[in-house]
Image (cartoon, rainbow, N blue to C red; front, side):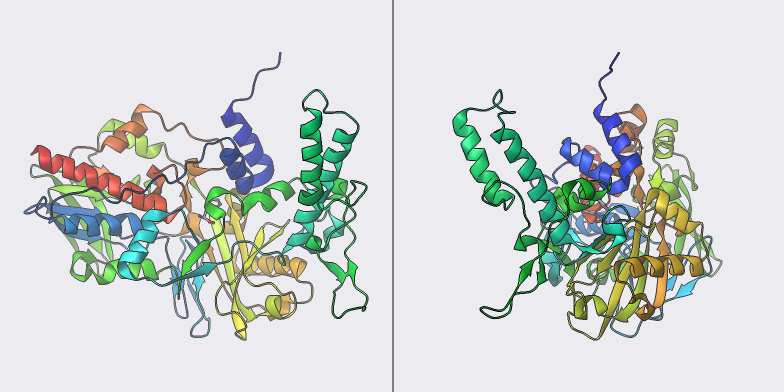
Amino acid sequence: MTGSLSRRDVIWNFSRVMGLAGAYAAMEALGFVGDAGAYSGPPAAPSSLGAGRRVVILGAGIAGLVSAWELKKAGYSVTVLEARNRPGGRVWTVRRDSILEHDHLPAQRCQFSPGHYFNAGAARIPAVHTGILSYCREFGVALEPHVNESGSSKFVSSSVRNGQPLPHRQVVNDIRGGVSELLAKAVGRGALDGEMTAEDKDRLLSFLNIYGALGNGGTYEGSNRSGYDLEPTILNAPSKVRAPIPLSELIGDPTIAFNLMFGQTMFQQATMMQPVGGMDTIPYAFAARMRRDIRYGVQVSHLTRSEEGVRVLFDQKDGTGGAIEADYCICTLPFSVLRHINTTLSAPVKAGIASFDYDAAGKVAWQSKRFWETDDHIYGGLSYVDTDSNLAWYPSQDFHAPEGVLVGTYNFVGQAETFAGMSLQDQFAASRASVEKIHPGKSVQLQRPVAVNWGRVPYTMGAWAHEAFGGPPVDHDTPEVRAVQAGDGPIVFAGQHLSPIGAWMEAAVRTAHNAVGQIHERTRAN
Ligand code: PHE
């Protein structure tokens, strides 16, 4: 008996075979991934609504910062408790002398030359993420284009041309040409006569001629879309379009469709953006406006309900501790961290917190001469490679500077767990070997590496909540998750884990707005 696969089964199957990008593309194709939706801004409130009310906010990542900022505008007095000595959480820019700490690796001190940086966490903003972009506008955070796709970046697969690095433009356009040729042949043979009128067939053939760059006979013989073996120069000098790679060979790599379509998914499409100077410009813009409201180096140990509202106990780096009383609390800690903190939360809320799993992800970044620009004409974008390093990501800023920071590894889930199981030296060696596959002979130029394994970073312990994509999707429509969403009396929750938008700053913004709205409701009800 053939059972029909549920959407969930389909996504899980894709994710097993294709990894994260596959699962994400499948979710998107199935309409699972929400558009961020029309942006209506933070919940409206008179500036006096919160007068006399205190809110303690746990975590100074985007969710905590947005919550604090909007509550202040509505007249509340806020205190943000942050365990690290910086704002931003997973929005973190690593520069010279930044310290990278893990619970399983020796600390690293970044050795980049002054002026170089690496966005270890959030690194790109899509144009449709109106919430986070509206804060960039409000604070005057300068943005520049982030190149997410490049015709010159490479695709490397041992099953295609023996692992020879192929330009993205060739792979995309040869596949499009090959598929178009087959479809044109099927139409020409009458194989689709049952589906189409004669008129529609003619229209489709004309469409395919242009769409697939087909020759006169309806066959694909290559096109300059895929590049040249001999580049054109002056009139009457020889030039030669690159011969196409057969479709059967290109589709021999099971990940090719997903990697090629990655940049077409809703949140990866042009125009992507990045703040000039590093992603942490965004959290620092908030923090600069709330200097007296944020306390750093404060690690929460207990979150309890009290007669007045909430009581939070904390430890400080100097060994002292303290307590804060407030009317309300917005807890933005990742549930991977919150579940290890003592709380008096209700059993259903605790069960909800325990029901969220987190995915691993990791990056390795290098300072290097810009061989990708000088030798391969790659200006931004990503190359995909069939190693555990998964891809290489080129800087979108400072083109033609002598050096830049290359992300030689950005991996997810199983590949990231494999990396996290390796020593730093082995992670660096694997990253270098992966770059070598994409740029033969060039990886000797890679210097001063740093690695981040987000699954093992204290105060984060996971790149993002697992249910966002990849793996067997968790059912969010459960009493436990709904209990978390409703909050526990004066305690409410925010953070990317509570949004279907997934691993994006926008998710943190939207859930912060929701939490602020919940506080307003409680204030109005009292
Ligand atoms: N937002 C992150 C990124 O752009 C994580 C992510 C990866 C989200 C893949 C969706 C798909 O890399």
